[in-house]
Structure formats: C-alpha cells, structure tokens
Amino acid sequence: MNYPDFGTYILIKNPQKDAKFVFMPFKTDNISIMKKGSYSTTTNIHFDNQCFALTIDFNETLLKQLLRIIPQNIFLNLKETIEKAEPPAIIEFPTMISIGVTAKLGKRVTAEDGVEFVPLNAVEFYSVK
Image 1: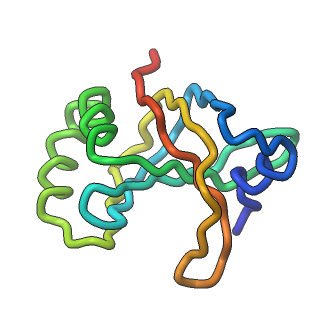
Image 2 (image 1 turned 180 degrees about the horizontal axis):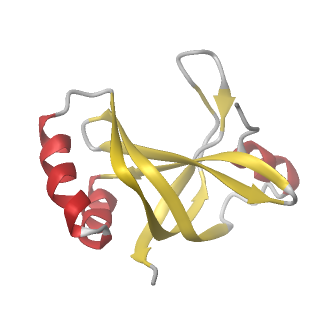
C-alpha cells in the first residue's frame, strides 16, 4: 500500500524550511544507496491519525554516524554490503532497527516512476534505548 508522503504533508502544513523534526524511535529495515556518498532510508510513520511514508536522506558522514549506533550483527554485514554495492541499490536489514533521527525538510524530488515527494535531510542519528 502506498501512503501519502510525510515531507509533502509537512511542507503544506508548516512550510518553515529551517524547522527540525525529531523521530524517536525511527524504525527502518533498509538503506538505499542513491549514488556514492548519498544514502536514504524509508519507513512508514503515524502522525495526525494518518499513516505516511517518510524518507530520510543523508550523506557519508551521517552514514558513519549511523553505522556506529546500529546493532553489531547488522553493522558487520551492512558495512561490507555497502562497500560492495553498485548504486543505485537497496540494502534490506534482517530485522527492523530503532534509532533516533533529527531531520529538516529537503527539496521536492521526482522519483524515476514520476512520483513527487519531499525527503527530510538527516541532521543527526543517535541511539535510543
């Protein structure tokens, strides 16, 4: 099932570009390698009594931060898989991970299938207990 895009919803409701959003926990089971040094993860979240698709984009520096906080069993396979992967690629984790994310609205993009959405750009990843 395709859910409405969270970034687009927020852009319509509160278009302040500098607003930061905190997701705790942010649960995901994938990382997409868009191109070398450019990554993304997508999940579904509940907000305002609705379910939304949420995409978080991040760079190489934030990937390293993410790798430091994910469970060790996922880290070992993920690091090697990312190093070997040819972009674009989607890497699925064996289990869902829960992390904290602070992010800001990104710019509207159009996916290869023509769907428009507004990703959020990660500012920080942190562990949640």
